[in-house]
Length: 258
Ligand SMILES: NC(=O)c1ccc[n+]([C@@H]2O[C@H](COP(=O)([O-])OP(=O)(O)OC[C@H]3O[C@@H](n4cnc5c(N)ncnc54)[C@H](O)[C@@H]3O)[C@@H](O)[C@H]2O)c1
Image (cartoon, rainbow, N blue to C red):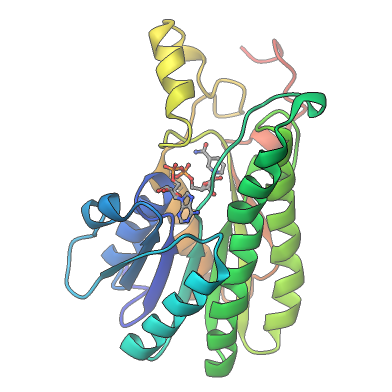
């Protein structure tokens, strides 16, 4: 498939995990990628094969940096066809009585305000060109409890809501906005969980609570992002697609699965 031939795609959180896999997938289908991440060193290592891709370090929680980045992309390429709005951070699973005050601003700043400001500034470019597709990375944690800490889950529920409201704002300009909601995926964000389970000899339990009874891989999220960003999804907007091995499809009570 060459669904992104000649297209310019921004991927945030591209240094690692789902973002890195998404950059590779979109590039493999012909897109020129603008890789964005706060981790500048790892960005260079995440560069997909092929010509023309660029790395632009950016802290997505800082609107001024987003404005400068979008200006740079506009002057270099003249257009933006795809935004994979994916950078994110996690937080502790502490009960609400014990959440850290600093975590609210840190997590919402990246996961929600950063996502919103990217839609704002890239959406303006897409609206002016009357085309474009935005795919936000939310989470099953934004749909159900039990998959992330309180603040993380609230931030991802916010991303799902933003996906719906901004799809309304931008739909009249031919710009689609959707989200993916990954289940448990092995990435930098979940490394501690995987390291712990493997260290404790409990690897076979990882991902077992979803219907497919396994955890997912970054490439499986990247392929869903590529679908939503492509013309194959030309009549899909405002939707949040769980890509979770069926996790959100059931009550998922511990001990119910064999
Ligand atoms: N791994 C999972 O199980 C899982 C499940 C559901 C949703 N997600 C979401 O997937 C997205 C990607 O995460 P991942 O799992 O690939 O983790 P990851 O840690 O491997 O990748 C996240 C990337 O975001 C970057 N980042 C963090 N803060 C940033 C900032 N302020 N500005 C720019 N870049 C920043 C990091 O440097 C990193 O490269 C996140 O939004 C995460 O919440 C992950």
